[in-house]
Amino acid sequence: MIKIRLAGIVIAVENRYDLLEWYCRGYTAGPGIKEDISISVSPEKLDEELEKTSGISRRRAELFCVYREIGYRVLPFDALLMHAVILDFEGTGIAFMAPSGTGKTTLTCNIRKVCKNRVRIINGDKPIIRVIGRKIYAFGTPWNGKEGYGCQSFVELKKLCFLYQDQENHIQRTESGEAMKRLMKQLLIPEKGEDLNAFFGILELLLQKTEAYRMGCLPDEDAAWTAVRGMELPLR
Amino acid sequence: MLRIKKDMVLQETSLQSFVVPVGKMAEEFHGMLRLNKTGVLYWRALEKGASKEELVRLALETFDDIDEKKAAGDVEEFLDSIRPYLEEI
Image (cartoon, rainbow over all chains, first blue to last red):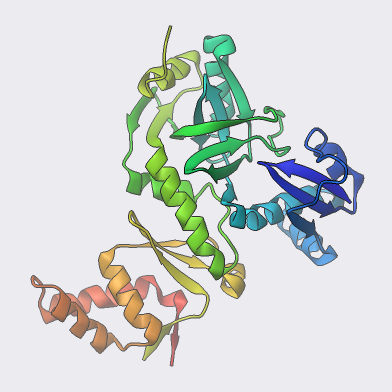
């Protein structure tokens, strides 16, 4: 069994394989700390995961099952799992969202390159978003993508940016209704009806507290400047 | 008479309304449906069970700028779009 702390929530996991313990290193909760949530993944759930994702081992399937289970179980703590790259631009949290392969990581790496030490990547794949004191924070998790970009930290989320590939770099504000539609595709939707009110409550607050943008981009450094200027991030 | 299948949950927010499959339906249907205000009106009626004729009457009572033929067409179009989520009762 391992105990990890994600977004301030202590989670005990009855793991079958050591890979999970290695994967979550650095997020271990201290000894004697009482867990907020207990999770175990049944052999049947592992089998389902293996059917869905061919070519992975049972050890890796456990990683996917655990993060999904965490995603469902953190909702009572005003938290949810998002598919996004989270950038901390001097205290301004930006969530870049798009289907895998669109260029989120390329863009955020280019932003980090041009803005140098003013930027850090909080999480490269599956951050946890949590409401604390009516503010929205994005937290790093061990599920940070194949490049492993991320850190054990958090940032207040202030901007959402929905990316798509295009022939030129351009960005514009998008209204909340449109943002909500796009955001829903990047969130883990609850399995239980009784969780939907909490889920949509967080979603509505997230859209109230952030500015949303749509950006067409090329995989180049100019895209980084377009994003920074377009989202009115402070340039020195 | 038609009714919305169990575990297809309509969630109305200030910005959009979504239908989300939960429980057993989440295994069968992936993703979610967005409904506009008219869709929500019909959906709520179908949650209790309603015939196509009742939905047409509802549309005529609710909207000023619509005649029976248009209402019937709109209702048919809506029902076609949500057919997988309906059951006969």
